[in-house]
Length: 65
Image (cartoon, rainbow, N blue to C red; front, side, top):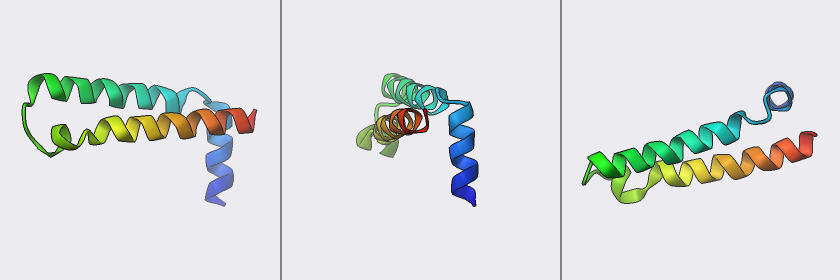
């Protein structure tokens, strides 16, 4: 049920996961500029999350047409 709603949402807005991924990677860059230490900076969590969301979004957009 939730998978049907998610797939129809992503089919309608194909570029949204990619735009979220770009925003997360840019936010990671800003954190690196202004925060010299911290868990988010040391682990690059937002960078990795952005890359994963971007890849999954691109694959879903291609699969859903």
